[in-house]
Image (cartoon, rainbow, N blue to C red; front, side, top):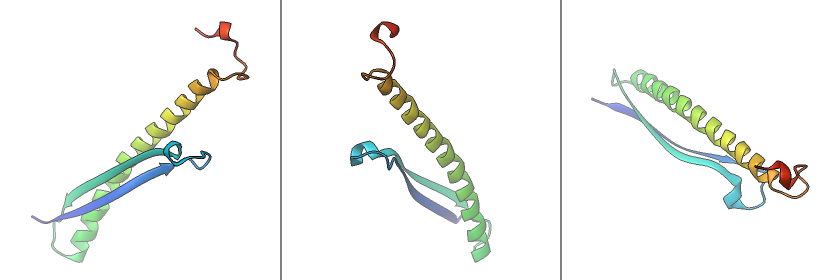
Length: 92
């Protein structure tokens, strides 16, 4: 049968960073195929809508996890910097 295929590249950039390697928080290619129940423009639109729904759910989860990991990493890096308010004796 026929399929509607949705392909996307999602890139999440931290605009507060100076250099490009550290700016990219997340980047991933997505490809979702959904069957077309009718070989009509309406069938294509319905299949693409289902494909976007699936991709959107996956993208939301992936971006949330990437952003959360970035925050955890930054927090850990801040703890080790001088003037962060934590004394070396307080670290374990």
